[in-house]
Image (cartoon, rainbow, N blue to C red):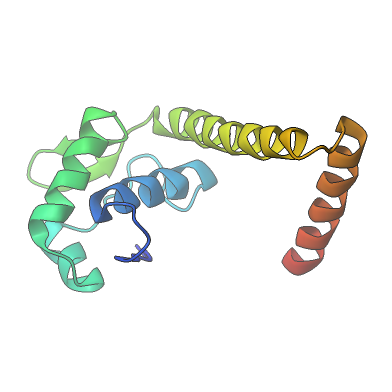
Length: 129
């Protein structure tokens, strides 16, 4: 499992881990039933205190994204994909609302915002190809 942790971005490290695991589940990188690295393993891979990993994993279990498999470790729950996709969509919707609100408050009208949005989508699409 590949995670990118940025200790200087203002988001607690455990929360970065939770978000990235949820994103990986939402996009299908982590699939239901798949085991995640042990606390010790992941702590070593990303050079983070094991207690931080444990906190993230506990939160993911509380949110029913991961489940404990006796004697095997932690695995992605069966219903986690739908939940993670919905959470990801909600996060994106909130971010878009913030951008729209900022645009309207700065004097742009809805048509101008739509044009900016479409230009941005085209630009990002070119980068993804």
